[in-house]
Length: 363
Image (cartoon, rainbow, N blue to C red):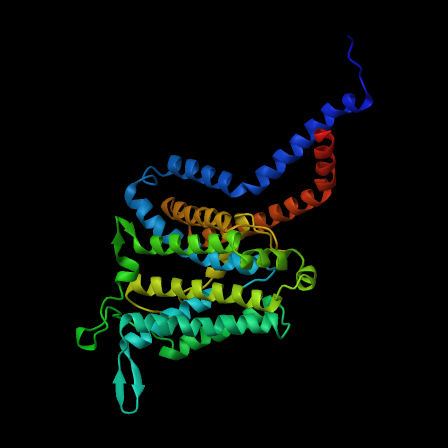
C-alpha cells in the first residue's frame, strides 16, 4: 500500500519546529534566574578563588536570607499587581522599636518595665503589621496607587525610626540579666545543625509562603486578583481582603529582617534598610514574577534572591567599588524588567499559535 500525503501532513513539520523554538525561548526566559545564577557561580569562582569556600558560603547565606525574606513578602504584593516601597524603612523601624524596648523599656506610671525578648519581638512585629495594615487599607479601600501609598509610608516609617532615638543608634542590645531581657543576639548569630538561624527562618517562611501560594484558596485568589481584578470581583473574590493580606505579609517579612539585622549587629540604627526595597523588587522580578501581576512564584523569587546575594558578594570579593556596585545593581533591575516585558509580549503574541499547534498535534 502507498501512503497518501495530505497538505496538513506537509505543513505539520515546520509548524512543529516553530512551536518547539517558541516554547524553548519562553522556557529560557522563565528560567532566566537559574541560568544567571549558574553563570555568576562560574564567573566568580573563576575570578575569585576564595569564592567557593565554606566560610564565604556561610557569610553569603546570611546575606541571601535577608534578601530572600524580603522577596517572599514582596512576591505576594507584586502578584496582585502592587508594589511595596516601604519594606526597607520598615526593617529600620523594626530594629529601632526592639532597640528602644530592650534599652529604654516601657514607662508605666512612674516605673520603667523592660519586656522580655519574646515580648519585645511580638510588640515590634505588631507595630510593623500596623504599618502594613495601613498600606493595605490605602491601596485596597482608599484607592491610592500602591506606589504613592507605600512611598508615603516609607517616609513615615523612616521618620518614626529617627524620632525614637533622635537619629542616634541603640547600642548593646544583648540586654541585661537584671532586666531579664538577655538573649536577643541569638536570633541572628546562633546556629542550628551548623546552619545559621536566619537561614532556618528564611526556609520556614519560604515553606509557608509556598504552601499558601500553591495549595490554598487564598493563593489562588492572589493570582486571580493580579491576573484580572475585575474578573476576580465578579467571581466573588474579596479583593480588598486579598490585597490587605499581601501588604501584611510584606510588612511582617520586613519586620523580621529588621530584627535579624539588629540581632546580628547587637545594635539598631535608624538608617538600616535603606534601598532594601530595590533588592527585594529585583529578586522578585529576576525570579520571573511579572510587575503587572498574576504571574510568578515564590520559588523563583528565592532563586532571584540568591542571584542578588551572589552578585553583591562576588563584586565585593573582586574589590569593585561600592559606587559601581550600585550602577551594576541598577542595570540588573532594568534588564530584569526589560526581559519580563519581552516574555509578556512573546506570550501574548504566540499563545494563539501555540494553542493551534497543540490542536494540530492532537489530531
